[in-house]
Image 1: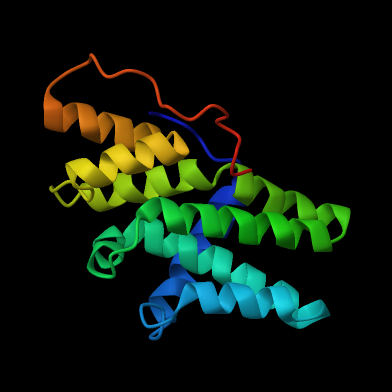
Image 2: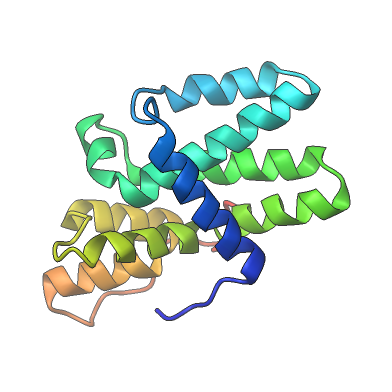
Length: 169
């Protein structure tokens, strides 16, 4: 799984990680409520809330999957919500700004895969076998498939049951 991000996505991810480290309330938020507030908001507040939801979901799904587990929420839920937040944000912006958030929505799963790979450089898998199966089936995550194969020691895993790999984009 060696993919390269374009410079714009790479910069966004780096700045997101820096901002995320400075946020002390990141893990306390109820992201579904923030998403609904974003949908109900107007203009600048809507844009800011949708961006925050997308960012929060990306950090949570990619860096803190164990906390999703504690909350009894699947990682794919955060992937779906984050993709939708970025997509809706892209629809409200002008062409130049919209392109970035459209790309974030379309590459959300890959970005989560990258963050999972970063976490695993510490030595332990960040997904349980069931989480890997769910994430792979729901999102087509390549990293989840590799993790699943590592757990099972098998290459005989069929392709994802998802009909459309661009479903969340």
